[in-house]
Amino acid sequence: MEQWIEAREMREGTYAVVMHRTQRTTHHLVVYSATFPARMGLSDADGRRLVEAAVGLLADRGDEVEHDLDLDWMAHSDADFLAGLRERLVGSATI
Image 1 (cartoon, rainbow, N blue to C red):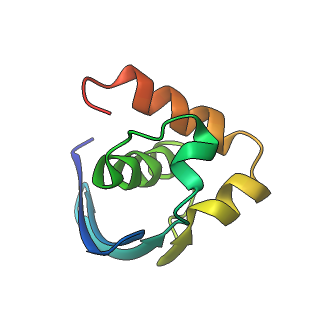
Image 2: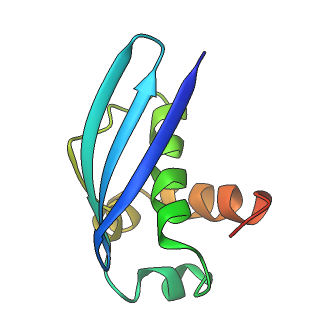
């Protein structure tokens, strides 16, 4: 399945995201707190990469990717989210 995700920083911790999967393009607004990367144990993680990995994780799990996403809330409400996101980021070539 063809998929690409592009995140653009609007301001610190806020990203506009375009995701294209197969024949569908969707737009999302993703936010996270300044402490979110450190709580993940990835204080040096690139914000754009972090957001793209989070949206990709949700899409690959088959979850409906909401228009507005709060990564802090996702980590609080979904026990597997942080582990999956951390695995994606650590497994990638660039953090």
